[in-house]
Length: 391
Ligand code: DWN
Image (cartoon, rainbow, N blue to C red):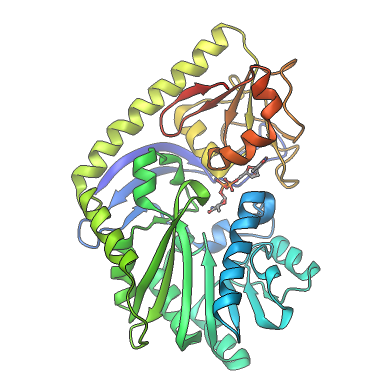
């Protein structure tokens, strides 16, 4: 059942060189399946339509993510002596670079991003994650005792193929660790901008555990982590492996049920909150325009593309965006066509308000822009509800 319409949207990471460049758009409808409790976008694109050789997102673009992946690697090193690690969607190697080169293998379909791994001597295969690939890997490398995947599995249309392929290369006592945005956190934070062409699914414990069951896989431990606006890191085993199921799993199940993650009514309420949020954000921007304030954006995220296209806040409201990613700079954001400039520290002499596109890195960004805030510079955020933030 469709519960939310986020309007006509471009692909969230397809930046254009010219403002007038034509672009593909699609209707972004969000669906709740009452049978299997899966929340997904209605129009599901194939990986090859999205993840190409000019993909602009680099995972190591923030200190927060570098630290989060490093901390996980420390934990793995402490607990597991002999490691053989496979990462599905390893991006620029931000996680794998923490291990010895002979312990790891990465899969990264976007050629330009896979090249960043190669530059760091990280073994990488630049292909999509499929059954065929898993069989080839099994033949060449055998099984892995750790398979990791962050912000990737939710991006792949056919999750049954994903997990059956994983089963082909996961050791009988191996651990599959996956992390993705938490549906419960999305609902709590009203973070509707987590839905876009790349985020085909937003999993809850409830939906993911039922998918895994079909593949004889089981979540035995999980952690709620702060990254990307609230994610869950799931620790998964083969059903036959004898690890104990931890209390964290039972706790998450209870919390999700208490918050009605399995009920359509929850999503209907969410839709009302999203529409209120849209009205309020538009009001803020219109007010600032009337007052002739200089407004820019910070962090040209896929999420910002989604929220701005939904609210129709374009280059008439936001002068430009600042972003640290070279692949996005000197280009126009999809749909709203706001120009992206190379990051420079914020100054109050030429900027009044800053729309926080990368709201998930608020802590990191506010500490970097302390002077701007101290000098009465202001940010605009839409999460959890649109407001102006000043120090
Ligand atoms: O799942 C996905 C996540 C992990 O990454 C992908 N589908 C696409 C992407 O989504 P996003 O673009 O919403 O991700 P981020 O990590 O919120 O993007 C942050 C952006 O902000 C980057 O373009 C870098 C930029 N940035 C910046 O300019 N200054 C970030 C920080 C922390 C900064 O200080």
